Image (cartoon, rainbow, N blue to C red):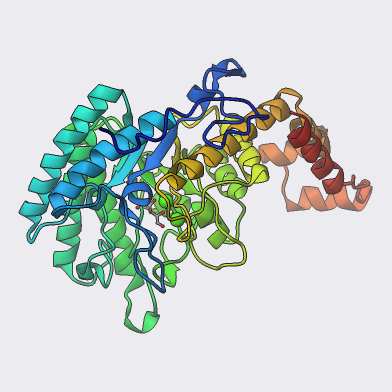
Length: 437
Ligand code: XLS
Ligand code: CA
Ligand code: CA
């Protein structure tokens, strides 16, 4: 007996299908720009939202129960592995992501926690072998426990720094054991509330020290995956050190770590930073630092991290646009760091959430590919910048002219006519592509 016996494998049935348990747009083997949809879209299930989260929010506890969540903690953890793999198989989701704390209960001591992890990791390994499902990334939860009250690597308490390193070491070990293709650092408590009690210089230096040690450890154990940093501007702390992509890129460069890390960009975190998802991806792309994506969506009217399944076709189109221009995500993928709403209390809601997410990204991929093929925005942007091709502009770009030379030019020539940015026309064309693809 399985855990989702009433549901069969989700298949592509096309946009006219009235079967809610089918893909309308995600057609795994369809070729787009020379690659199958499933190669473009390395979807991943987030273990925490799908199998650990039970509907709690700031105002209330669990709103639902999974029928397999019965027994002692270790028993539940084991059953969750089998349920998770059955779920991913039925969903045709080829990857998963996890925090150590999602897959196994914490023990009284670090040793006991690690023992629990080893038991569950062995079961996960067997299931991976049985199904061919892979690990996109692993990470550690160095934010939930009370010991992280003043931060993890940025804590004023050096023994907390040590404990954080120990947790990361183990999480990197098990990620490697599971063949993980990346390892993620999200600095949940790495930030502060007030400067009245905070030594920001020491905290940032310590964060960099921890990351350097992680790089050394990666090399020591021969972990071949990519190390990723995930920016987020708030929640839990008021001033998160990893505010957004450009802050993180600047930080990595300051500490000489820019060649060791790439970024994991989450859509909802972009919203919280008051950026668009596309902006965050674009900043990573032009700096050659786009590593992976947490594919979800926030809510502009709620100022917090709602982690909804992505249903906004504009966002997924423009995200896939950046990803295609980036030449894909390398070792990264599209991880649904998303949870069904508190009111979605039925177990099959987990399927509907992932189906709409996969379909919305599939359609976004199709539109983005066509926009690139037709060079719609590429040609427009090139034309808009065409003045950068004349003699003066070449001199500026090559650094062959100084202020005095430019002053002479301005005095002699004045300013040539500006062209229209044509935003509305371009937005109209984008709509046309979304509707007609
Ligand atoms: C929290 C983050 C977290 C990271 C992994 O807001 O999104 O889930 O993705 O720790
Ligand atoms: Ca995330
Ligand atoms: Ca989030």
